[in-house]
Amino acid sequence: MKLIIAKPSPYARKAHITLLEKSIDCDIIVDNPWLPDAKIAQANPLAKVPALLLDDGNVVHDSKVIVEYLETLDAPPALIPAESQQRIAHKQLETIADGICDAVVLIALERTRAADKRSDAWLERQRSKIIAGVAELERQLAGREWFADSGFGLAEIATVCALDYLDFRYPEYDWRTQVPALVGLHDRLSRRHSFAATMPQPQILPGL
Ligand SMILES: N[C@@H](CCC(=O)N[C@@H](CS)C(=O)NCC(=O)O)C(=O)O
Image (cartoon, rainbow, N blue to C red; front, side, top):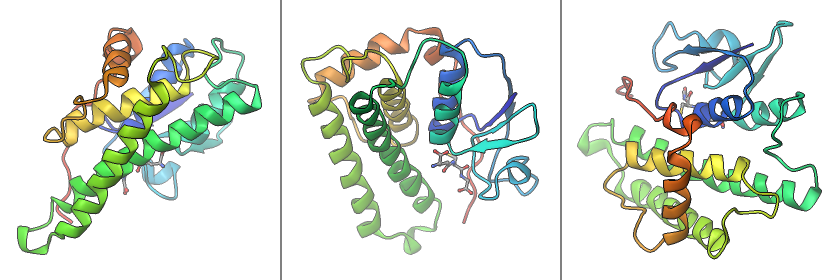
């Protein structure tokens, strides 16, 4: 198997951390989806990372589908619980975390435009989604070690990927104020090899 990633991508990182946590053998191919010769365009019609190239020639793409696929392999530990209510809880939290990342991407792209072409209303709209998303993650984690009774899993992976992505692409937003549960989770998980080895790194962003 091969996983196509981009070094800053929080979605690709989610899939990469899942592979590492499950000790699944997989080659990592680093790509930049914004360049004209990006490899990802051959694998995913949407030309977005990540994509997982399977040994039988099939391709799995979108990080949510990749982590679902990896969960079907015989590779413990379970990161998405089988029990329906807990499963939905993890997937719902993943959606909030990914939604925060979506808003950060939109802000970063908007900022690549010339100052007179940027929309402050659009930037503010995305910022309010980030603030609401972080507040909801904190609300759901407060007083608990993990989001769901099943313990560490997809929800925590997606959340820490989103928080590190905020630090990386939107550092002027200090998510750490008034979210002690998230700060604690972030500190604990940042020490794990799978998280420490996959921290976001810069790549060229286009001028759109
Ligand atoms: N929902 C997708 C989002 C993937 C995504 O937006 N990836 C970005 C990098 S962070 C990308 O490849 N963008 C290239 C483009 O939009 O053309 C997932 O979870 O995999």
